[in-house]
Length: 106
Image (tube, rainbow, N blue to C red; front, side):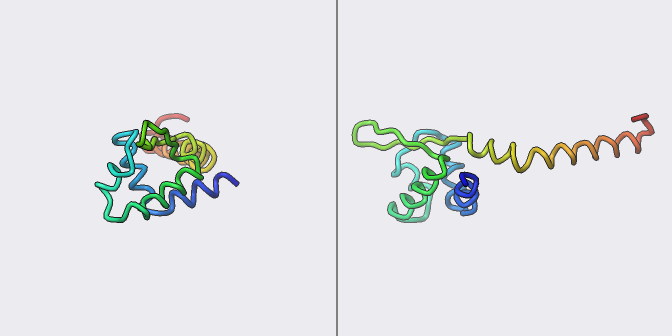
């Protein structure tokens, strides 16, 4: 299941940090990303491979450089499937509570 790969990738704080770094500045090299991480390039590469397997990161070669780009689509798909349906119910309850407290008709 594709969601399993996304959840596994997002479960690690280092991988979330990598996604945050790419969100701030998309299209970074491994070296640029490692400047903001306290780990060896090999470890960062392993984390990036997991993010790529989950389709959260894509790469593009530019000469000898490999640029990394965030792909927010899988996160949005997780949101749509797992978060949105609960958010709608919660917001409806808050709306009803507001109306009750303010004495407004439903």
